[in-house]
Length: 230
Image (cartoon, rainbow, N blue to C red; front, top):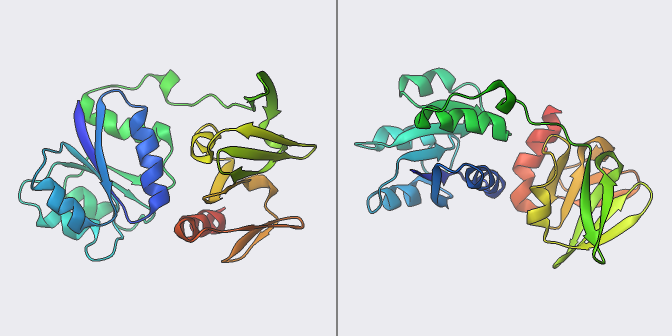
């Protein structure tokens, strides 16, 4: 088992990496930290094999943090910025992942530590066009392209489609992991939107036609970066 931690100031980024880690049998997740100072304290008391490390963070950047370690574990940089790639490889990191990080790319990176060669069939995730949700003990097919947005109401979700609204008992964090990340984006702790249905956005909300969906503060930085790049 490869013991790993996540160091990133963005909650959404930490959550995504935690989800990826949970799907890899040879990774043991020890925890996540919002800055390098907290991570440094953890490293003095615990054995860690791998750090999934953001670069642009308050207090100490990932590069500054790595340079400060006397005997650093293996490091995979996870960042939204391409310009640090050359410097990072001079630090002999395992890999350099650009956000948003897909599971395939993540698995390729961590497999370097486990000596696993990826088969061609693992290099591409099959494209899904629908999911099934349980409503009153019946599994109902929902075509992904029909989903406009998803709204959380405590332990229930409203799946708003182009033709109907489906209510299911499920937490939004669980449902978000089922949806393809290249088609859907969580913009608020209570909302997931279809990227193809967005008609406009500001720094405060997402617009889908006449519908205004708020952008959560902890999600804002990454959401705006993804939308501006698309």
